[in-house]
Image (tube, rainbow, N blue to C red; front, side, top):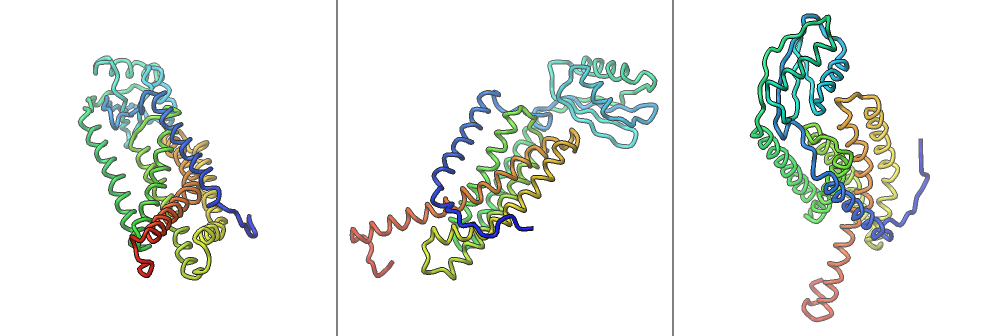
Length: 313
């Protein structure tokens, strides 16, 4: 199946328009942050209550349990099951531990009057756990970015390509994070995992394009850098569209039919897939071109002023 027979789009010539689009998305992210008053951190980062319960009879429908917990006015919680035990992790509220246990237990018992439950244990998860996870999340992103810069710099023998790649990844992650804040979804470990997945997907797409540019640079010495970049993008455009469309369709299916547990992950992947393809074509490569263009202009100016001998060029 071939979507495009041959394209000759001038991506570099339109780079400033896409720079404006990226800036607008960053402004939207900042606006979402201000509007929501910051991220809505989940129990992984804020601490809260952990309640472990068991039922006399096997519980087959967890959705009814979720509805029961929501009836107790607990809106932010997670459910984990292990054999006959069910663990409820709820975000920190103004309720005391006794009040939390009473309201949740009463609501669950009202929902399942024919299936008595027992509270095995209940405890408070302190904010120190949240602080630890916050640091670990930051470390994850830092070392991921550092590793990508080193790899791309080594692969293409220039730190410029590595920095451009990471700027594209930061662009994708920050804007994806902004869309999470915009819809007021909770920030938990699942969100961190989804953002790292977006980063991995984005860098893979970027490396494929950069590799094609480097290959064309070796065989297109008489062409301008802009023409080589445009040619390279057009050559991999079909591959980028098909790959991104495939991931987008899968992510969209998970978003609508995957259930509540994976809903946030799929939401980020839907946005991140589009952003990953966008940043590769319209941000990373134009940044490389813009840097090389300015560097060459500075070099020509230095030669003109006699600062650099033209024979050393």
